[in-house]
Image (cartoon, rainbow, N blue to C red; front, side, top):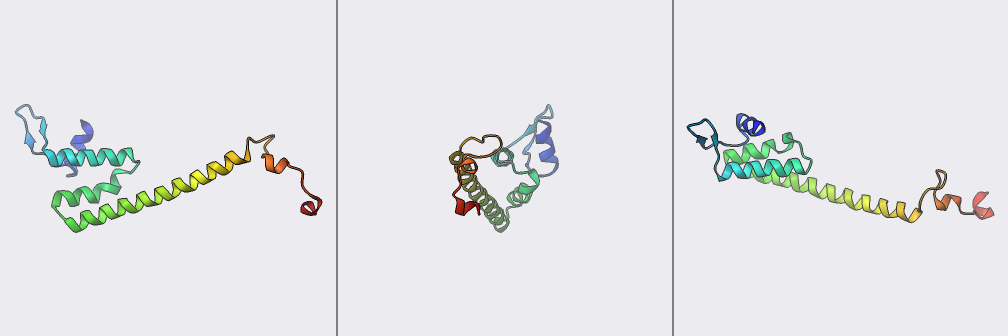
Length: 117
């Protein structure tokens, strides 16, 4: 709950009002903003990286929202490329086999005289 109060104070999440007991009331838009924040945090993105998007959503600025979406899409593409590169690396490591005394199987294989010279 403390985090939600901070989001409201920073104007990242709109509050629809308060109950008689002082609890915040939130509408569908606020719930969507909270879902965006949670998804960003789960993806490892810092709040700073989605702050412009949340402000643009709250102000109703379609161009700024589109720019933020494009930035997240670019980040996703970059992560997918890194994931593909990591998959290739992992396959190379598996193909090399377990290290023996700090050396891989290939480095322990006998070399031809022409390769040594």
